Amino acid sequence: TIGFEIFPFSFEEYLKSREIKINLNSSKSLSFIKNALEGYIIDGGFAETIGQEGYISRKILSDYLELIVFKDIAERHNISNTALLKHLNKYCFTNISTLLSFTKLYNEFKSQGFKLSKDTIFNYMAYLEDAYALFTVPIFRNSIKEEQRNPKKIYAVDNGFKKIYDYAIGDDKSKLYENIVFLHLRRQTKEIYYFKQNHEVDFYAKPDGKAVLVNVSYEMRDEKTRDREINGLVEAMEYFGMSEATIVTRDEDGIVEAADKKIFITPLYKYLLM
Image (cartoon, rainbow, N blue to C red; front, top):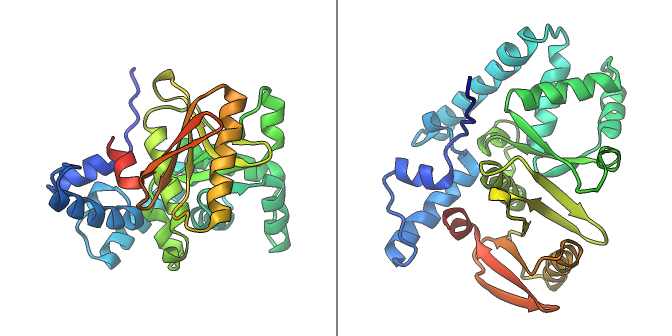
């Protein structure tokens, strides 16, 4: 057999499905693209949800998750504690693009009255990954033991799953942006890490065998935020011996030169369509 990974629509595929022309040099086309991006960030890229009203879209995605939980996971792995599995689902999809400590999660669930072991958390997360509902990204280290000692970051296969549980999604667009960038990289490679020394860098990945460093920041108007994003990438570029990196933002476009290195600041729509 030959296996192929099929993801929900990329942003380019999403635009084509809505018959929006992709021309980054046309102000009219850009207006349609930017407007479509707002919908894509919140609603995701599952084909059946495109063009549907909010309630119907949420219902379709909710049914998808029910199928994943009960058919792909609970029945397949003979899980009786579906309440815990559902609770883990909710926790993960409301906390996409964040660090996940299995020990902390175990203690939190135990304090809520769930009967479980640490192995249960590990197994359920593995099942969710196996079902392509979630992905975990390790820290980059030179040894597997070091990777395992550190928390992993969690991402969802589609941004739309977040809105099933979390109605306040407008408060944290940066996490949704980061999840979109992860999916963009994941379509190209499985070799994705986050990097951390003094500062954290969202992604160190190798699409097509070429190393890239990417930070995601919804806005960088605040000077401290700007410095943190730039300094983190400079630190990572020095560590990996790289000369270029990227910061993905909402609408800023430009180049920053720091310590003889180039950082390309790119709007999300442009990054996804390049």
